[in-house]
Every structure is written in C-alpha cells, then in structure tokens.
Length: 125
Image (cartoon, rainbow, N blue to C red):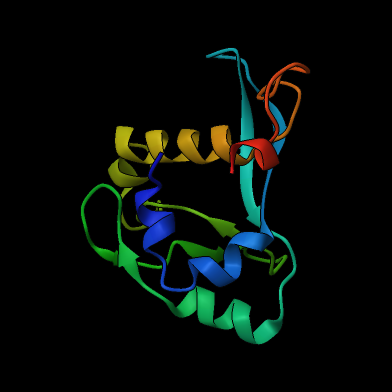
C-alpha cells in the first residue's frame, strides 16, 4: 500500500516512528469513526525540519507542507492536501480522503479499525 504524500516526505524514515493515529469521535452522517493523524512529540530540530519540507498536494500538485503545526497547541499533524484556507476542494476531495483512509487503515490500532482477531501493525510491517 502506498501513501503518496506521506512517503514522499524527505524525512519520512526519521519521522515515521512518531506517527500516531487515534480515533476522536464519530461522524454521525456517515456512521464512521473519525481519526486524527498526529505526530507525537519529537525533537524540536526534527519537528522544525519536518514542517519546512514541501511535497506535492495529493490532489492538485501544489508544493505544500504535509506535516503542519496545530494552531495554539503546537502539536504536529499530517495533512496530504492544500490547507482549507487555500483550497477547500483539495482538502475535502476524494484524493485526500483516500490518503487519510489508507494511513488510518495501516497505522490505527483502535477497536473500530482492528478487530480483536485481526493483525496488529507489527504483524503487517
């Protein structure tokens, strides 16, 4: 399974160990669980470099940072498409949705994504 925007990040080998996917609520309109694709705290220098790096938007190809700092908190999160302030169609489009879903399916360990009898992330790597 390929994660275009995530694997294209020049620092992916160094930051992938900090990736953390967690459920945070239900989307009642689609009866699905929403997930956050975050990065756990990493060394400041590495975090700064990760945010500075640019890769193409998964939808339009514009050069963007897919590792972003959350306003107010300073925590980092993953977003494969243009920010909503720049292009709502990219951030809410099918390509971005498919990318999010593929990352969640590979890395999430919540009970909605991994049945008790299913493989763990360690078993699939």
